[in-house]
Length: 114
Image 1 (cartoon, rainbow, N blue to C red):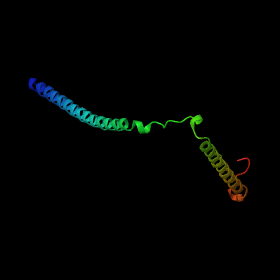
Image 2: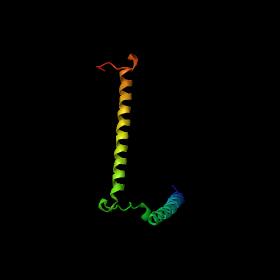
Image 3: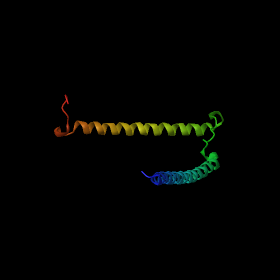
Image 4: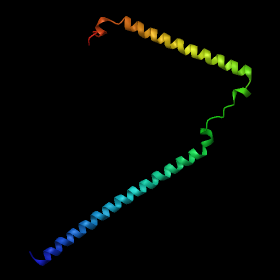
């Protein structure tokens, strides 16, 4: 081969390498800009959380010894009634489910050895 063909081959290789490096640098720069934008959004979210940190803290509980006796009694009776209602609703639901299982048609039942 002629000496000038080696210069052309190496010149094309160097130009392609530089082009590829420029393209990769451009992609890296674009990713960096997207990352900076995401960090800005994250900083805004953190500042909003910092502003609302007092609202996110749980309320301070007052010891029962300092509360009104009558109010505590009413709250306790109300909670007992709520729990009794929840238990009764759960029993009713289980009874309905049990009756559905007892009255299921034979086509929907599975054999005992299935």
